[in-house]
Amino acid sequence: MDKTSTNLKHFSNISYNSTSYVLEITFDDGSIHRHPGISQTTHDTLMSAPSPEQYYQEQLEKIYPFQKIVK
Image 1 (cartoon, rainbow, N blue to C red):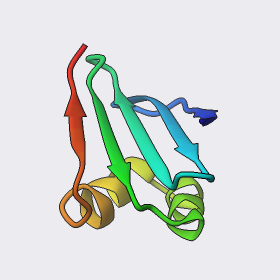
Image 2 (image 1 turned 120 degrees about the vertical axis):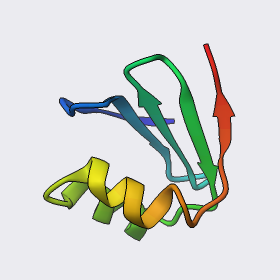
Image 3 (image 1 turned 90 degrees about the vertical axis):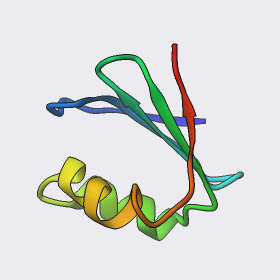
């Protein structure tokens, strides 16, 4: 998994695997949303958005299925 650490309000980490097209968003509470089938372009757009958290909430979280992992 290609890791990309972030300094965001509610995310502690954003990880993306460009081989399997899996995006993982780790929240400050330790929970993870694992999204399969995310394109490199979508990941790049998320990372370059003025507010990645807002982009995630509006464009990814409600549209793309995910598995929630609670730690």
